[in-house]
Structures are given as structure tokens and as C-alpha cells.
Amino acid sequence: MTRQRARASATPYLFLAPGFILFLAVIIYPAIRAFQMSFFDWKIVPGAVSQFIGLDNYVRAFQDGHFWLSLSNSGIYMLATVPPQIVIGLFIAMLLKRKSPTQPLFRVLFYLPVVTSWVVVSLLFKYLFADSGLVNFTLHDFLHLMNRDVSWLSARGTALIAICALGVWKGIGWSMMIFLAALQGVPETLEEAATMDGANRWQRFRAVTLPAISPATVFITVMLVIGGLNVFTSVLLLTGGGPGGQTDVVLS
Amino acid sequence: MTAQLQTARPRGRAVPASQTAATTFRYAALIVGAVVMIIPFLYMVSTSFTAQAYVLTLPPQFIPNPATIANYTQALTTQDFLLYFANSLIVALASTVLSVLISSMMAFAFARYDFAGKEIIFRVLLAGLTVPAVMLLIPQFLLAKDWHLLDSLPGLMVFYIAGSLALNTFLLRGFLASVPGELDQAMQVDGANAWTRYWRLALPLAKPAIATATIFTFLASWDEYPLALTMINNPDHRTLPVAIAAFQGQNATQWGLVFAASLIAIVPVIIVFLVFQRYFVQGLTSGAVKG
Image (tube, rainbow over all chains, first blue to last red; front, side):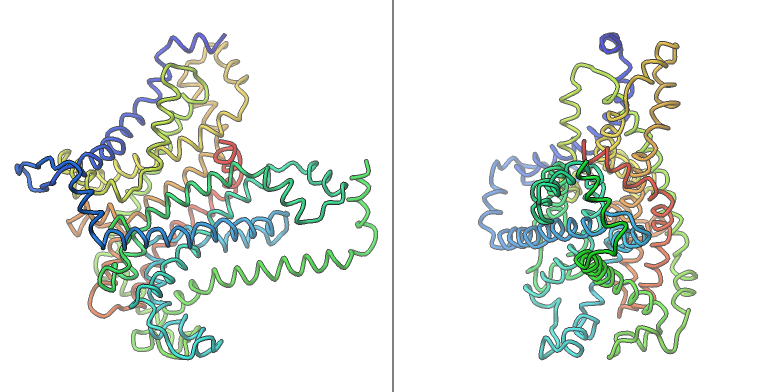
């Protein structure tokens, strides 16, 4: 009844208006503009006429070896960072699920990289992966896993390792937090019933926990893939796309 | 019945060995993980107390010897660091308050009303969530130029607010929708108008989700780098991330100085997080996850 009365009124639109108008102007319009610009030989100088060139920019991009290299870098980044963030994040959330006096402490420790700015953690990792930095020291002089120091940020492969390591290290806390929230919604009665039926830990996890948290898993995966496409700051500050543009990602 | 008996059983007797092993494993894994998370920070803290001459020496020093606070005094006194800090604080606070206000209004409309176009408007918001921010950089720059928003802090706020609207609305709508509507209807019968019901009822009820949205928005606007880098030219209007990245660019990187500045920059975020984290998980539970 109230719903019907509400249908006729302008109230919901008034509540939506400020936000939605701003959103259309500042996010949607530029997004359309970006798409439109991709069909023009765009002149950024005022007054200059931009020429419609159809799909030429796309043809140029697809013929450009550098575009493919950047695309594959972005692809590698997503493959190397999204699954570990989900798996490790869920694993830690499972470990932290039970309430205990130490739970808040661990939660804050794992979440610390998330709240730290990309600029700061990028510079921090540049420092850790420096030639005489902590990573080389740990792997070479301390654990003796490598027989020489590696110049991480000056070759494509090793620089990508550093960039991906940063992505995973920074992101685990975030997925852990969302999983932790989702795990609290798993009904305990279901778990108890499964235990009664003789299900072991792994079976309970597969049959009860995973299905119950699947909305969260979807949400996390979508957000991480978008975030993975968005990676920019860490690449810019760690390697500047170097050596010679070899670690550029699609967006740069 | 049987389930209760089973769970009650271990309480009286000694804890079974398998359970002790599981607890040990649990803590071992957590501690190893926490150490990996925390070591880079400890190293950063230690470097921030180290003079440039001793930075990156081998073997690495975790306790700086000699220790110095020169980096902190230098960061705080030179290069207008405090101005950048104030800039960032103003932008982040204003963006957070306005964004949470505007998106909670949208969430209220979505959760409490049926209206024509509801589905489409919500889909458009979700679609905006998937657009990579860096792709919008150039068109947003052109837009800012047309609207004379370049090189100004309020201009930056406009973009930060718009950028956080979709996620906040999504979180808050999920939370409000999970709160039963009876109270709202009761207030309506008593003659309360929509604004009163939003301000007096919906907002206080949505406290956990608002805390979550506040953390996310403050974090995003405090840390934002690419937009601030593109839009701000005047050094007086720089925000902290831009200033810190510039610290690193100048001549040979003074790592101690960079990290002293970074650590000062982390403090407000930690404060916001600790203040609101009580509600954080609760806000996520009904907001994002059941969405």
C-alpha cells in the first residue's frame, strides 16, 4: 500500500538526483567520451579539429607490438595476483573465523597493507627489491636460495615478479576482510549437521562453507579483476614501465 | 540433540590431541603470515630512523645504529610538507562526508521506494563501478578544464566524490534493504516526511555500513595518486601522495626521508580505521556480501 503511494511521488528521484547527476557528468560522460575519442585522431590542443578516423586507432593498436606486450603484462598481472589473493585471503579468513582474543590483532596486521597508500607501498617495494635491498639479502645471503644478487627491477620477468608480489601482498587483507564478513553469515547448524554426518574438515568446507559464501567470492573476484586492470601506480613508481617500456600495462 | 551432545563432549575432558595440533597449526600459519605482512613496515620504520649514509648497507640493520630523527624533522620542516598534509586532509574529509551523505540518500531511495527506472539507474551505477579509473583520466582532465576545476582542491573533491558514489551506494543499499521496513512505515503513518525518515531513522540504523563506506572513501581519497598527479600543477595545491612520490624523484632517493614522510602520511588512515573498524565487518556482512 505504501509502496503504491510512493510510486506516484517525486521523492525517490529527489533523493537520487544529486548523486546520480554528478555520477552521469563525472563518470559516465567521460567513459563515453573515452570510447568516442578512440575513433578520432584526437587533438588535445584547443581549436584544432579532431578528425574522425574510424577504427584506425584500433588497427594501429593491434599492429603495435608494444600494445600486445602491455596487454600480456596486464594479463600476467591478473593471472598472478587474482587467484592467490582469493585463495590466501580465504585461507586466512578461515583461520581467523573463530573469535579469540588475538583475532582483532591479526585482523589489523593483515589489513595494514590495504590501508597504506599505493604510492607508499610502491616506494617501499622498490626499496625492498633494490640491488642491495632486503629481498636480495634474504634470498641470497640469508637463505642461500640464489647464488647471486638479482637486479629485480631491471629485467621484464623479475620486475613483473616484484609488481605481482606487491599486488598480492597489498590485496590479501582486503579479500580476507570480505571473506571474514561472509563467513559469519554461514549458519552454524549446517556445519554441525555435516559434522554429525561424519564429514571431515575438508568435506565440510567444500559442501557447506564454499556454497554459503559464493556471493562474496563472486564479489571479490569481480572487484579484483577490475582492480587488476586498473594497476597503474605500482608499475609507474616501481619501474616507470622500464626497462624500455617492457613492463608497461595496457592503461599506461 | 546429538549435535549438542557432540559439541559439549570435549569440554569436560582433556582437549583431544588432534585439536591441539590444529590450534598449533592455526597459530603457526597466522604468525608466519603476519610476519610477512609486517616485516616490510618494520624495515620502513627502521629506515626512517636511519641517516642516508647507512641506508641499504649489508647486512640490513633492523635497529638503526646510529639512530636519528633528522628525517622526521626534515620532512616536517621542508618542502611545505605540512601544507600538503593539510591539503590531503581537507580533500579527504570533505570528499568522505559529502560522498557518504549523497550515496546514503541514493541508497535510501533504492531501499525504500519503488519507482520507474529503478532497475536501469541501479544498473548504470554498477556499470560505472567496472570502468577502470585510469581510462577516464584523459576525458576527466578535459572535463575539468572545461569546468575550470583544474588545479583546485574543490575540483579534486568533485572527482573523488563521484568516483566513490557507486561502491558506497551499493554497500549502503544492501545494508538498508536488510533492515525491516516496518519502522519506516510506522513513522510514515505518524506523518514523518521522507527527509525525517532518512535523517532520523535510516542513517542511524545504517551506522555499520556508513562506517564501512567512510573507511573506504577516506582511504581512496587520501591515497589517490593518478588524478591528483594529472590535475594539480600548482605546487601549493599538491596532495600528499604526489608530494611523496616527488620526494623520491629528486636526485638520489633519500629513502630515510621518503619513509619518514610516508609514515606520517599513514597515521590519519590508521586513526580512521581504528575508530571505525568496530563496525567494519558488520557493515560488510549485510552490505556487500548479501548485496
